[in-house]
Length: 249
Ligand code: 13P
Image 1: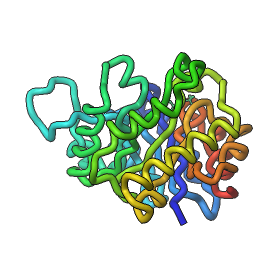
Image 2: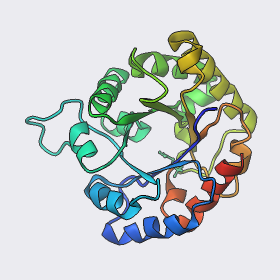
Image 3: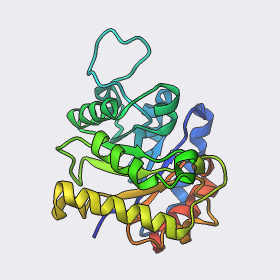
Image 4: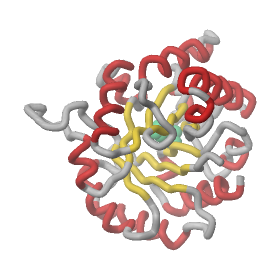
């Protein structure tokens, strides 16, 4: 059985006061909860880890530098992230690919840096609205998988998140058929590259406008093992029903 993961990406939202939402989430966790991960802004990592305590809620960062230390003003390394108690780091989010011109080769380096620090890399891929409309989705995804995933990718060091850019923060969600098509395609590609033992076990998350009212439908897809949630992860009252839907799937 593949592990299920409900991951929240707070993006650049939240100060210490917002940790009250994490506190609230603790009491809303279902009994048979799947893995739950919250990725707050970097200044909150340490405190978030303390608030999560022994609940099993894991904490992750939203990006890392590919070097362990050095003259990179303003950046944080995977080692520093691990030092806060965090267990995961998102790499290759489309907002970083677009705004910071990060390419597959950068993301591959960051994933390796994450692993070297003992973190699990949540590697994001996804096509633009233009590519979606031009029916280039599978070609784009294949290229990003080939370029962003290091050769040593395993089921314990990596989670893959498929986030169509046009679905992020827009309220637009692909049809279940479209999600099934892309996730089945990703599964087939990683099995071909890494072998069935690894490829079959890597968790695949869907991300892009996941909300309490559409989560259960999205989780019907066999190769959807969870979600990477933006806006709806900021409030415990929104994120908890998504976690419940995943637990019930
Ligand atoms: P939304 O859930 O707000 O669409 O964001 C998705 C996302 O980018 C998570 O990384």
